Length: 319
Image (cartoon, rainbow, N blue to C red; front, side, top):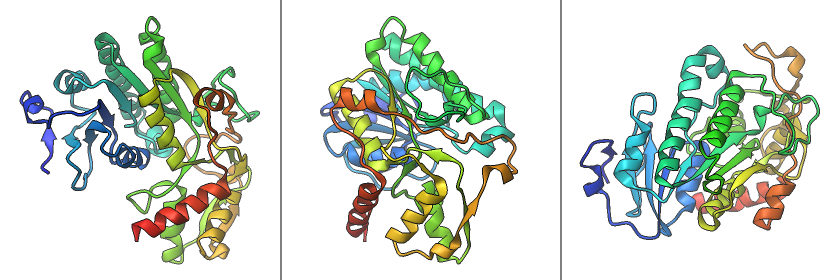
């Protein structure tokens, strides 16, 4: 299937839709790729991508879209989706710190413009934010806690949250925001997510330095995707924390991954955020409480051990 571009004749070229029409941005990203696969044939998906998108099924219309240049409003006008799932973002914290203008454009301004177009048309929107909107001073954050971002990336995501909440203030039933915890799972790139880095470094005999004093509530990638699909299908609206049940430091997570998949644990090395030399400070404890999500959706994300076991099963299907 050849890629389409955001041009006036796109709508006529798209295959006839069946089920919900979903505009998915960031379809080649770590989470976006998983969501694209999990949507299966139950929906008609218009999948935007900047990098390479592999040969796709008939229910997917690939859309090559340069977010920094293309008008996001055009996407909704051309494809007339029932729901927008916005996962595209500049997520690398150091890249955001070095180029804050680009980070704000991609993470905040594009999000707001998509939201404005969606709200104007009465289209539902599902947006993925981050646990890093908190400063990490206390951990175990709930939706009632006040965000205090410590990085450019987190600040731009928080600004995107605020923009969407303002845009949808009169139509809150159309907006779902997930603050997604540190996610682990299989990605299309060896450098995607904590799993990819560990495997890449282990294969080349290189060490991986992980913080013993930076805590998160890691989330199995499959559960993040499931939550997004259920938000689409059951129209759960609101702001939700979406993290796993285990509060662990990055080093412990890395060791569990290495042990489960038979990697050399000697290559997993301890490091402290006090020694971090990056351009911006790191938040020490962005662990979240996901009780509101569990009550609303009726299920709880799995813990690390169960998540890694599911990854083992998925790996069998990939080989």
